[in-house]
Image (cartoon, rainbow, N blue to C red; front, side, top):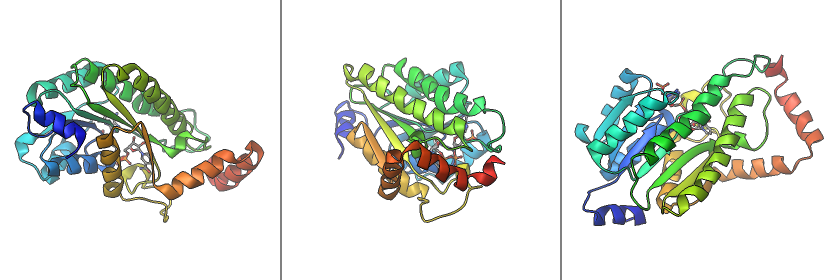
Length: 262
Ligand SMILES: NC(=O)c1ccc[n+]([C@@H]2O[C@H](COP(=O)([O-])OP(=O)(O)OC[C@H]3O[C@@H](n4cnc5c(N)ncnc54)[C@H](OP(=O)(O)O)[C@@H]3O)[C@@H](O)[C@H]2O)c1
């Protein structure tokens, strides 16, 4: 049994209360599946109610243990209300996954897509602030999903990469702020997943199944580690890319993304 589960148990509550943004598909739904199988109470938040309902039906849990919230993470008041409603239903929220995210679909020549930043950055801030307003229990954890795209700029996804870099720095700031309250912040840097987000992109051996990544994400949050990066091969490649001088990196990405930039 994990440390935080023991604490929740000592408080006389069976299982954790877990709130997941972007829980209707992809990584978020697989995170929900891990928790549902443990018997935790799970809340899924995303925009489309029909997709949320279908997602909830796929979880191995009693219907009463899965709550859904059809809310846009950009809507600060609605996010706050959803988090508060779940805390009223299920008790203090032990775990949040700030996971909802989008990526540019337009070519690199298109104007900067502020909508991506609004969702990937301010959407995270909204759920963090909403959760903190519910007075989370000691030893609770918020897991914030960033990406390896946070480490070096890519010409075709400037809003995505910068939003993921910003959210990682935000998570680090938050860690310092919440430490005294006994709350944990875990930042996840992930590589390509087999989800809708990247479905238009080329398949390769570097793509990780969402179910596999979800187990890593939940494990990192269970341990309350400050950061985790997955998979190891991509972590090594990104580390190598970070060491490259700008002139070489720029030539490499220019060649790789010549078509996207045209
Ligand atoms: N896929 C990758 O290769 C990859 C790599 C590294 C990191 N990540 C990160 O992993 C996280 C999950 O991505 P994924 O691959 O699972 O994506 P996905 O399959 O496209 O799922 C995204 C989820 O976010 C929800 N969502 C999107 N915009 C929202 C909004 N404005 N308000 C509320 N919910 C919203 C979606 O539901 P609705 O559209 O119905 O709202 C859906 O549930 C993201 O933060 C992503 O950046 C992904």
